Length: 262
Image (cartoon, rainbow, N blue to C red; front, side, top):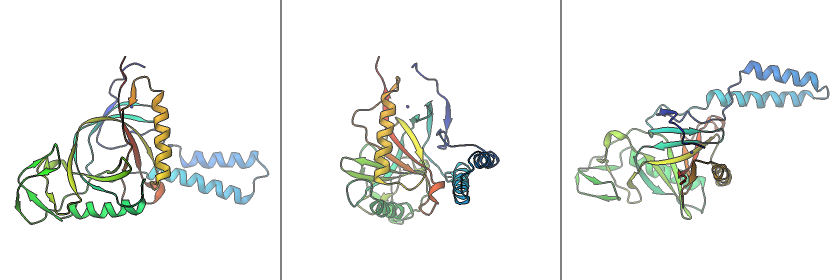
């Protein structure tokens, strides 16, 4: 997400995204000092504001991290200064609808998160067998719940006018995942796919998602190798706990793509 590009790397963690500054604090401060010397009319307040912004930028570049948890496997096949193209391996998710208004709604996301967290942390029953092509479940063998490990990312995706939230399931279960007690939770297998991804910090809002999706689509229109797949809907991946500071958070938006036909 020109000629066919060669695979760049095989990654387990989403650290491939371009655009994060790497300048040292010393360089930032030196630049500020030069700015003060060349602009004599700059006030003390302006200098302080500039310093705060520089420190915040430096903190973002050094502390934007994702938790050390199991995540989706993927392979980077192309990287630009605007997005990364990944080949993603199949994975299983627990999924539920996000209640609330149309669009990405923070309150609806919080409710959906709580529903999926309850499933992950024990409100489930173990199953002997499960069909993974559709959310059809077979007989239960015992009723004690099983606590599963948290993974990353938490995925929200658009489905028509609605949004759905998904937790990636630990790979060790394969298709033998516990059954949800809550009927609003379904278990699905996501097939392998190719996606274009771009990362951003902060809290996710509906307006921000729309703006970044539009920007990503525009950038992909100029890609000679990949194009957005017909009817592709935007997905948002969030990698940090809810209490994480905004400038240290990592989020990604993605669109499914395919190779252009010659």
